[in-house]
Length: 67
Image (tube, rainbow, N blue to C red):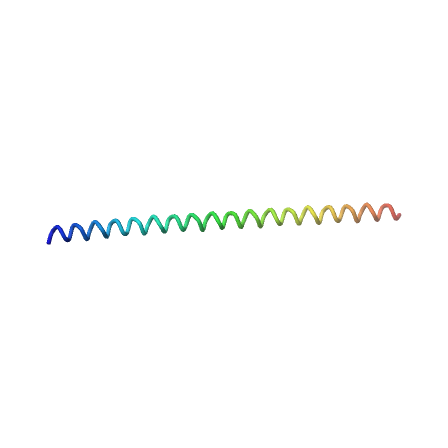
């Protein structure tokens, strides 16, 4: 009986440890994906800003040529 309790206790501990490790891995993956999305969003914003700046400069240059 005592042996059974020890075995069950050990298995529960192992199960909880594995469950905790799995949850940590999943949380790490989610955090990594979130970070990657944020970086892509920032890069896309930066690209759009640069593109808008170039368009504005080109328009200003064309306007000066017309004067």
